[in-house]
Image 1 (cartoon, rainbow, N blue to C red):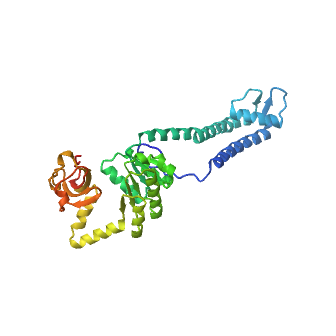
Image 2 (cartoon, helix red, strand yellow):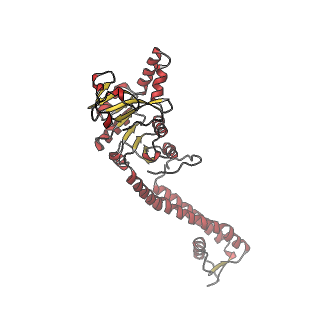
Image 3 (cartoon, rainbow, N blue to C red):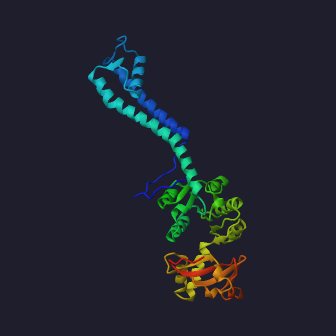
Length: 344
């Protein structure tokens, strides 16, 4: 899981298909190949070298001299005396030495320092994760949900995105979100994002079966966390609710509602979209009843236009007797102007 500031442009990233050991083998092979090349040249040009110890250049001397030249600046016991040997050491061996050092540093960073840093950074982010929003899946729907949340004033630092695609997560990082590469159906993945401390979980994996499994896993780990899930097939709505989802959204059904509303008039569907989007002039808001509102009718609230209350989990419209007197612990659903904040 990581955070980064928004860059000036996105760099396309893709998870390497090579295992760590194969990657190390490639690096070792590259070093040995460069070393073998230098040994071969020095052997064929051994007349350009002088051994100050016994005046004889053997193959073992070549191996020794090449290794010392690549890893250090040499000890002076064997030295290049011809112009060709000196130019080779200056123009080829020295760059090889730098390249080998960079390979060693890169390997150390990738397999030791970077992993240690990532674990430390993840631990620091986890300490700050509380009352956050977890988004499982960053496809079209998940990214749209995050964009809408940010547009409504949610700090991207309070959003954690889980996805198996590095490319998808790079876009989430650009938006300022915390990200975690992983499978949201696994207990450990959800525990890593502290699902038990989350404000809500949005499940938009792109597959109904996967989304329902994520919901089951999350509900097992966090019995009280609100879960919103998007499903594509009507017959999966009941399994999604049975898995523990509090809100089940079917985009096909919603589109059907908009189409049906348009039959009643050209402005009905427009107003429904207005309510659903932060870009509209008004939007729906949900809050708990305030202390000074207890006993008053729903129509008397001053923060917006009350349309429904939830009492003990049961919905009651503004036209029903239950809305004539608000009670403690009632949840109010109201229409408020965009940009207004309902009082609690």
